[in-house]
Image: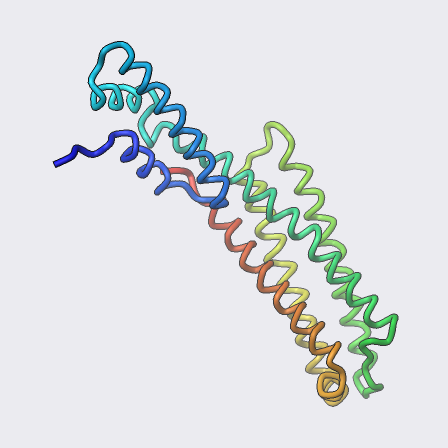
Length: 223
């Protein structure tokens, strides 16, 4: 029976406690594997048996509990940065997209009794979207600052996205419920409106998903 490879076992244990972007996590573990294999080869060149050389390489690398926090800190920073980029692009992008649809007439709403309420809610939604986009840009800048806590910044990014999605999605639902018949007519007669609503729904779902991921990663400590 072949003995378990100490390096493979150690890295599997390390990866199992890490949380963050999958590609980044795999790259970090691959780099660690390369370093461990180099250390193993050095010990083997000194005359040690393969199993002993691998065990010493793992010992020099450090226990999972010792090295995981530094790996997790980098993953947390990457997760927060990625989410901030997404929010900084998507929120203003949705605002610009809807403004273009309304201004070009591709999407229009019939006059309704509650039209004034709808206009007020639309203004609130525009303001919230702009503020969330600006906050995401500011947090993105912070992710590159030395000394900034990755966990705190990533938590702030996740909360920003979650609050933004809740407010924008909530005002959209209320707007269209208040719009009543005009909303129904718009959706039943205008394919562009249906596509715009569907696209916005997908984008909000992505934002919520990434917000939850950021919050989850911000809680991870590598233990």
